Image (cartoon, rainbow, N blue to C red; front, top):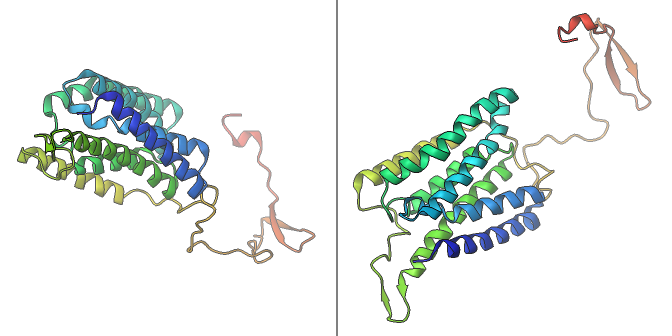
Amino acid sequence: MPGFHTHITVSTAVGIGYAVWGGTMYDLPFTTCALAGGLCSIAGIMPDLDSDSGTPSRETIAFAAAVIPMLVFNKLQVYGLTIEQMVLFGAPMYLLIRFGLGTIFKSASVHRGMFHSIPAAAIAGLIGYLVCDSGAHLVHTYKAIAVALGYLVHLVLDEIWSIDVHEGRLKKSFGTALKFFGDNPSSTLMTYCFLCLLMMFAANERGQPPTPTAYARRHVDPNAPVVTPGSYQYPVPTPNQSATRTPDGWQRPRTTSRRTRLDDPWQ
């Protein structure tokens, strides 16, 4: 069985390659690619949350407790929360993940159970999709695939180490990582129910702008309206507005009323 250092080294190497691919193929910013590579690296030890060894579980939960509250800040800001409200929301989330999640995983799972399965990799990717809300479909999906990819790297390594090359035989652990069903029917049912629930949440995500030109100049949204120079018509001024004519002939409305300091209670 590959150790912690093997998993983190291989998943980090795959994450670096994935980051370089995203930067060269889709013109993604360096920070986005670096974050996706880091998520792929950490996801490479996530399946060992059910391990009896404390190192993978401790490192993964500590990373998740620190990073997940920061990743959801953008989503909370979309819903109109203030900085104080986001801090009050993030602090309990950190404590719950840091001190409650590990205990739940350790008591409710067995090693090489459904944590080591293809549906679990899909669940990890969907969680990454829901948490890493960047406001653009391309970046959104790019980070989610990074999480699922790192998770699958771990499973593939476990299957490779289950082959005894020297004796030419398969170990008993062969087939326990890349699987769709586990030995416990209740765990398998709960895994697929959780997977379906996350899929519904992902499908009902708020509509975000498609591939932005700032992130992927090679992919233009076909549904975006095409505006040619000089074709834009400004609205007709209302009776309370006066229009000014610019040298190019456009009519730009200008309101006649001025806002005073008494209009703003904070002034």
